[in-house]
Image (tube, rainbow, N blue to C red; front, side, top):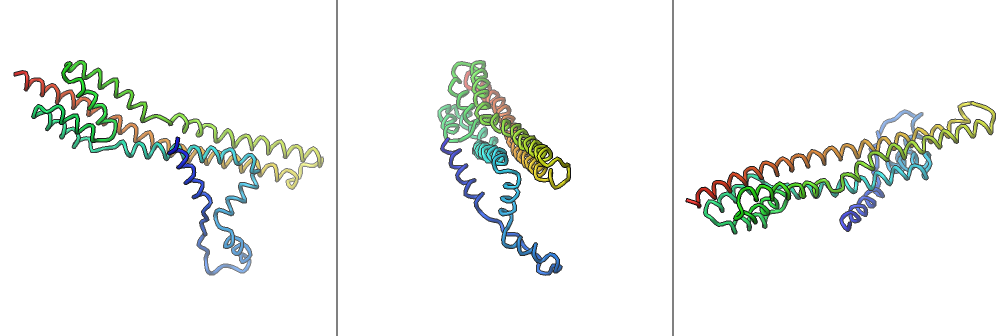
Length: 253
């Protein structure tokens, strides 16, 4: 949780930063006033303006979903990046130790290597004296535990992906209600009367969909990393069992 709060704090600081647009030097006289407004404002001011126009009360809901969703995404990306290791080198070091009959050295290699691949190999080596069948069951069971660690927090990301459009649609419905209220009060259906409510409806909908799309991209990237690490875990488990069988055959003679 401390890591998650730290990520949220950093994201809040970054959000407060301004990004000044690069303005063209030569513009038509009719666009001079607009250029001055954009020069003095910047991207963050434009976003703030749209945020207020979409009704800050309703726009804040998708914004919170975006911040929390990105926090979980960044935490997962950091965790999965740290979980990746050079699997071929790890298995080579384990095999070199077992060829010499030094099981403790193989365990030390696993202890000194981070990531789920090294963890499941260590669990298998802990039961190497009980036979290959016990080692296999241990590796499979602990592999499931490690897979659960890899997917931890992903359910929250999917929740925010599903919630963001719905939160945007809340603003859409409210905007439409506002538009019909103004029609009822004015007794007229002119564009000027309904423009405000319709604008709130469209802006909140767009913002909610953008939040969902951004989080979906990060989520798919996270899933690809989980699949890659899980595949390495399975390959390493098979390799470890093959090495243990060679070790048993060699030293039973």
